[in-house]
Length: 233
Image 1 (tube, rainbow, N blue to C red):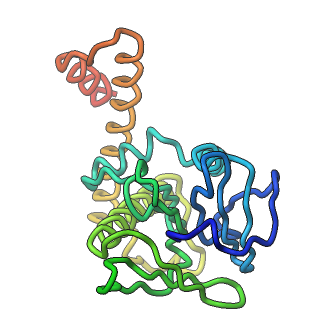
Image 2: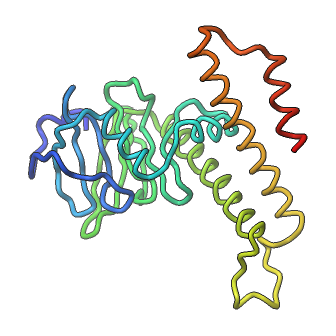
Image 3: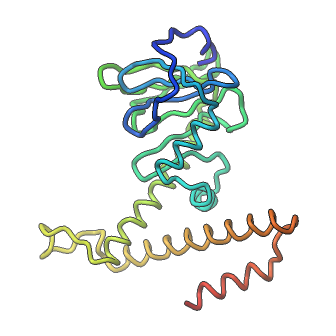
């Protein structure tokens, strides 16, 4: 990927829609265009900036910035990806790095550290073949980013299980059994996790709006008042 401009291109397009199920990786081709490797093995150039492609992808899949901020804050990681449960699109390094590549973790078959040149080789499983992709990042950074995305996904899936319980959604085949997910202690842990995410999301939205409106950081006392109002409902 360090020599992306020399890769063979199968087509240049304006209309390709990046989805969880059709894309292996995306990266900046140049300042105005984006390189895409599809699950079918096509190497395409999309006439849109990488930032625009990512923004459109997030909007179309309801992966909102305020939600990702709250979730990644809970797992103490600043390098954020786009996570929706088992679906994960993550960067290989910081977003501002010129060599950043975004890839679908749910298509990651394996990864290895290349000690000679301090890169990481990703094995991404497409429909008909597995692609070996070398990216400019350390194995430690790669592992940290993937682990954070896994933890975010785990929180989301816990919230999903709590919502199923909250709205009485149970599997009919298990109606006479009590699966682990329906255990009282597990449900309460998932509830607390859900409330943490909700609180962090609301505080991020309010704090951001306050700073953009008044040009200064929100008063800590006001933050505490917001928490009290939420907890009193």
